[in-house]
Image (cartoon, rainbow, N blue to C red):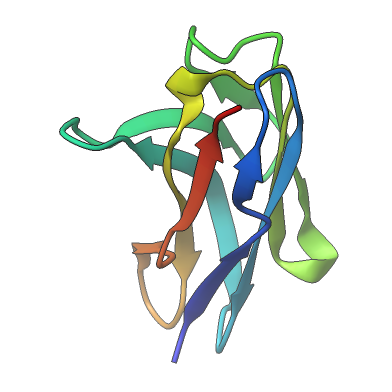
Length: 119
């Protein structure tokens, strides 16, 4: 059974930083693109950042220059370093990974981790 387990969320003051982690486990043969998405109350889930297996990255305009996505392929883990956080970054953050398990690629999601930016 495949699992994506996120960690690192919490409460932070405006201007502060947090680092999210997401580890994939299970019978995984290969991992493609990994990414972070977020959903604020009353809003649709939106892309934050993605990183391919070759380390090519893509960011939402709202986080460019503040967030950095990275991955450790040996640990099947993707990270999101978030700096200069503001109240608009408050949301549940979800990890997503494109995984090859047996005979095809499928997308898997983590359970989400809450990030709250507040004084």
